[in-house]
Image (cartoon, rainbow, N blue to C red; front, side):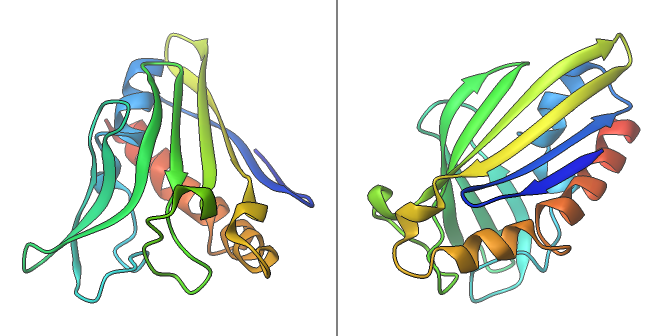
Length: 160
C-alpha cells in the first residue's frame, strides 16, 4: 500500500482480497457498507451513503430523517475497472453545487488475480476549490481522510 500527497493530488494505492467485480461494486453501490458515519456534511445523522450507478448519478448521504445531502456526481461509470466522481464539497465542508468549484476523485480497479484487486484512488483538481484549496488537499490526504477510508473499504471488499 502506498499513499502520496503532492502539490495537486492525493494518491492512495492498495490491494484488496476481492475479485475485481466485487471490489468495484463494494466501492460504488456498496459504499454504505464501509463509509464512516462521521464523514458526513449534512446537519443530521447519516443513515446511508448512496451512489446512483450511472454517469450523472448522485453521491449523497441520506440522514435518519430521510433528508438527502448531496456531495458528488458520477463522472465515469465503467464497471468493473474505472469509477470517477466529483467532490462537490466546499472548503467549509458544505455542498458545492457549482461544478467549476469542485475537485475530482478517480478510482481504478485492476485484477491482480482471480481473488485480488489493485485499487488506485487519485483525488485531484483541488485548485478548483479556490483560494485556500490546499486545506482540502491536506484534509483528504490526512490520516483521517482517504488513507483511513481505504481500510474500511478493504475490509468490506474482503468480506463481500
